[in-house]
Image 1 (tube, helix red, strand yellow):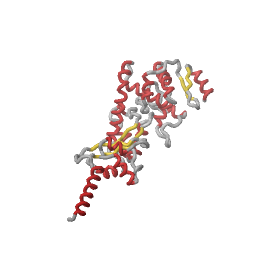
Image 2 (spheres, rainbow, N blue to C red; image 1 turned 180 degrees about the horizontal axis):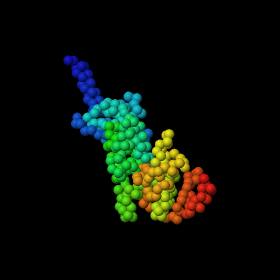
Image 3 (cartoon, one colour; image 1 turned 45 degrees about the horizontal axis):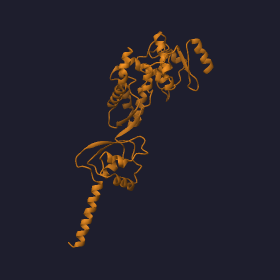
Image 4 (cartoon, helix red, strand yellow; image 1 turned 180 degrees about the vertical axis):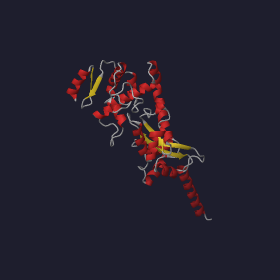
Length: 320
């Protein structure tokens, strides 16, 4: 072998070794990890974050590889199951494919069937799986039938079962609600009662600013033994009409014989009517002191309360 060929082989060896140092795996051991790309990824430096998590050898080299591949904007938000024994090319292929975990946003004030619809779309559930969510996975305990599918942003594995997802929501609710358990107990209020009232407040309020007042009115009516006469319970009873779960109530709805009909029966419904947020839970715990027994919202969603039915009728005339 002549000297030139030896030199060429040495140079090639150095180049290959250099490439492997920059683009090879960080270890030969199997060390699986989840790499998370946030929902808002505009300012997210994927190469830098991979390096910080020790999933690649060199951030600059991976960034170059990403640019050369033409996939610098191809990666999606979500979670990716990676392994530290993967090389840079394998990591690149994985994070520019479908995520293993997806972000799911649950707004405040949804009933569990609406949560099921969001999950079905995000996780590509069949109609059968969505039905199981409504009728099997979410009825593990009587107190967990409704109201505990806590509004928040979740990162959910695509291969997680509906039952496991229901437990994920319930566990998260229990964590967030734990701060309020003793406070309700100190006021001699069962947590299930507090959650029912919070769900009514969530559906009835135009925003956080009038939650405490609505809470005060609900508590006033309960203490006086009055019917609550809350439209949201009728909406819950009626269910989905066309594509709307919370459509306008009409006179016929008030005649339906159901324990959820607060125009017909006194007291609270048997279960919450939605999953409330923390502001509504706070309002249920800390109602505003008021003499009002009635309220309405005008066309601008401004609340107006009244102490007597006559005053309420006058508010109806003036604002509706």
